[in-house]
Length: 114
Image 1 (cartoon, rainbow, N blue to C red):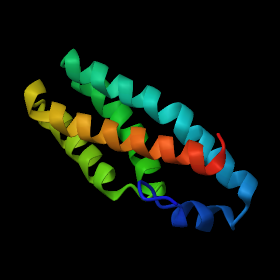
Image 2: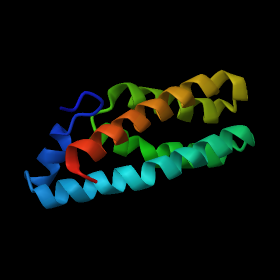
Image 3: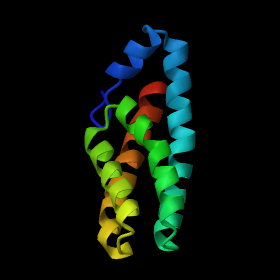
Image 4: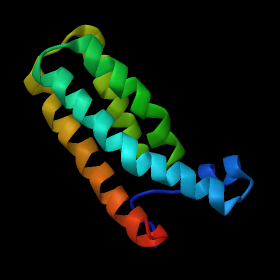
């Protein structure tokens, strides 16, 4: 069972509609990795606005999926973009988020046959 994510908010939002839950999970599995790649691109190119835009886009998904540590870390990425920090200062945080998302997606795919 799920250790990397918590669907209580998803079920509450969907009124326990399994079709809706599956749609949300499918969107998470397909879109968040692409958006994370864009965050990395922004970090690598020191394009803070680009990194911020995609970090901001991912933030509600992490919250909805109950990924509290990744959610807190994406807030750190947003804060980093605002101060226009150094790339080396945020890469470990980015790698942590990416790892958590990857693990959650692996579990979701297994748990929901996606």
